[in-house]
Amino acid sequence: MSSLLNTYARMDVGFTKAKGAKLYDENDKEYIDFTSGIGVVSVGHANDRVNEVICDQLSKISHISNLYQIEPQKQCAKKIVELSGYDMACFFGNSGAEANEGAIKIARKYGEVDGETKKYKIITLEHSFHGRTITTVKATGQESMHNYFGPFPDGFVYAKTIDDIVPLIDNHTVAVMIELVQGEGGVQPLDKKKVQELAKYLKTKNILLIVDEVQTGIYRTGDFLASNVYEIEPDIITLAKGLGGGLPVGVVMTSKKEIFTPGDHGSTFGGNYISTRASLEVLNILDEYKNSGALDESIIYFSSKLEKIYKTYKNLFEDIVGFGLMRGLRVKDAQTLSDILNASVENGVMVLKAGKNTLRFLPPLTISKEEIDEGFKRLNTALSNI
Ligand SMILES: *Cc1c(COP(=O)(O)O)cnc(C)c1O
Image 1: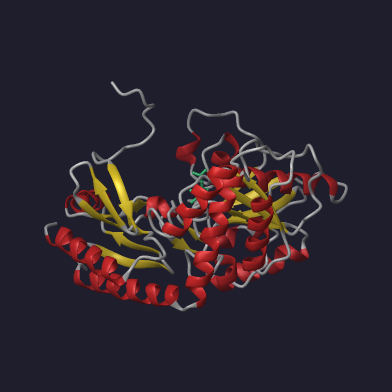
Image 2: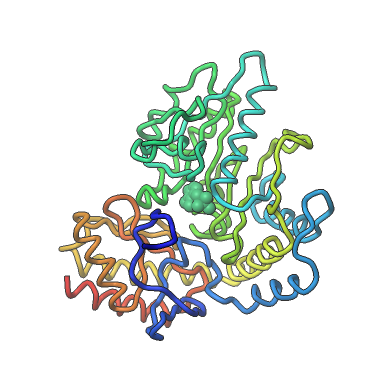
């Protein structure tokens, strides 16, 4: 009997070392990583530059609490705001769910102080995913995740599609919270025009737009934020997965820079020297990578290989979805998807599942052409046996 609670259907493989997009298991078998740990190690495993700043920082100071000035936290926030292009301020936590908790608290406080009627309702989308805490699981528009854990905080309303959001708005609505590309829900991008129209409408109604960029943020979709790709100006944005190069970190950023006063929100570990120093280096690396044209090249190359697999295996796949390096292939049925996942691991390439029937690809953003070639070669072998 395991000493771990039974929360994950884990594959029977564990790793001992990794570099770039390559992983090695206990038997020294090599795998190409098309998952980056669910979009986390965006600059690749054991990145030299990130390792160096972490070691340097560890040897100096790692933690002192948010009661004092933390220089790398300030620098990291400054860099995030600069790269986003939005006039916002940041709060650091330790995970995506915690970032979204912060976003919800900002919205709720905004609804309290702005106007006479207390506004508190937050509209989210079906098939969304916003986290595993009691509040963020309730914000998640998947009924199956709401079993057992009630009673929940009030005020979450689910829209079936983006078209159904506006009719759900009433006097108590304070915010709409969306992922621009649903990740866990199955790599499902929202329509750009519709999002722009929604964003415009919400501004006229003084309703906040919260964009959950925990998965889409940090260049995953080709620009720093998916919000940049969609050319909108949200009021609140959350980040986490790809930011810390593997270290736990989450950020909520908002244009309501004066919303909180001391005592409203906090975190013991959030924004510590190590995670913010590592995050700052990740941002430096990816900023350079994007500016040099290497990221766009990588996206084009990965896409061409994915297209080829999609066309070769029309018997297995129904659609090709996503953009940037957040991609998916819709598989005909759940059993085939499960078979593909197992065959991939066997053949030394790691891929992910999303929703019921999507084979998901979230490779490190800095993955090399050689690693892409090798990964698709192995995937091809895996698929040819199904
Ligand atoms: C992963 C994810 C979360 C939750 O992040 P955690 O760090 O696991 O708490 C929230 N929202 C989205 C869109 C995610 O992909």
